View 1 (tube, rainbow, N blue to C red):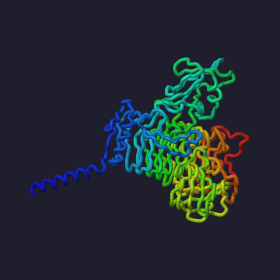
View 2 (view 1 turned 60 degrees about the vertical axis):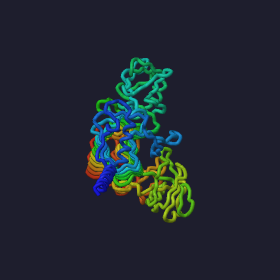
View 3 (view 1 turned 90 degrees about the vertical axis):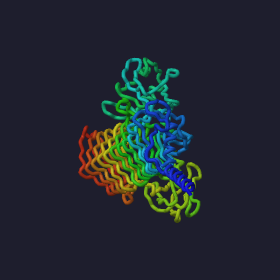
View 4 (view 1 turned 60 degrees about the horizontal axis):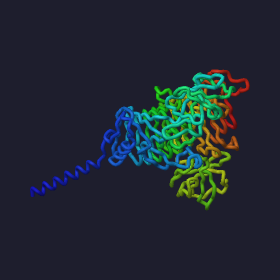
Length: 573
């Protein structure tokens, strides 16, 4: 009997031990897996093992010690991801992403950085969530040893050409007397250039690099100091800096996809390659105190090759608060859905849809149970609602959609579109700072409530806020119905381009403008301060329920004589 009791106790102890092992572990540190701070060793594999351990053992918190951790492509996971607004089949046939931190099918995990810096090498997507939920990144810095963008400053000019100083992080070689910008395992081939003026603080378009410097003989005077033998007619502004990057979006900064409840808080993103933080078909996203800008001690100007934050086909609520954006060659924030063009009608309830924009295709854009609307492309109007019963991808460009009711008889094939209404978010963008971008501060097109409040927009190259929506160009969907723009400060915005160089622009793509059927509705612009350099404060096309109240205008420079309107309205009321 005594032996039986002892055996039973042993079995119970083993079972209890196994049960405890199966239970979640509260906290682990990356050092337990061999990732050592300030070792300058490749810790990609160790971090991969740490994340896998968190997944299988239901760890709640993964921590870093303060310091630097280096990640190379060697040891990184590779996944074929089709990402909205990135690259066409011709630009970049491969959709393989080299991912430093892949959070695949994880739940309830906080990554606590304690101020650590993840330093990436080569071309990489820094982090991705994939079918994960309740994920939080906290107190982390992300950067690249060799950013994909290069920076060259004019320091001298004489009769024989110009002298430029390259930023120490901008590596190069000279081949056949021509400058070649290079990195860790890559070179910059198809370049785009934005010029920064410290005098005006403008990020402006220029052809200096592609049309002049790239075709001029160059010699190295000393390390990082180059003399270009340029035409005598070339007269650049000494002190200005050229920011140059390859246009191909083969990687992205981060990819938050098909996930739920994702939070970034006190996260510093100092450079992103290709495109920025792309959230795609993810529900409930919070960006709080995310600083998209170069490190203060880096001396760099550029922090992203294109957008900083891009939200495509998301749902729930997008909350962006207390963030800073400085140094993007495209938009700071872009929120939109995707219009797919109707190509073919198989039967009364089955359609063939096509991704139209070259850089947006291949991803899951519809799910059974989703509510969709037909969109009259010429007017940009929703006109019939259905529910998705079945979805089939015929190829990366084409989707077959089965609906719960008969298709309208008056659809215009090869022109009208389908919009996924289920995957449209509520948006709150509050208490942020935007500067040093050649394009827009915020683009937002969603039919749900959007609040843009108490932000500062300093010298955005195009409109600080753009509400567009189109079925002709980018195919970015979402006519708005409830937008509040309140308590913002706009300073010298819109110096680069149309529409009308307006600080706030409402510019849908509809070719037929009918006051009886406006595209956008219920936009209120209240209590904002505009410090203008001769540009209109508002351009509005095809809007109903447009309200302006208690806004203040301060003229930094007078409105030009040929511009008498500070508010330009086309078929709006």
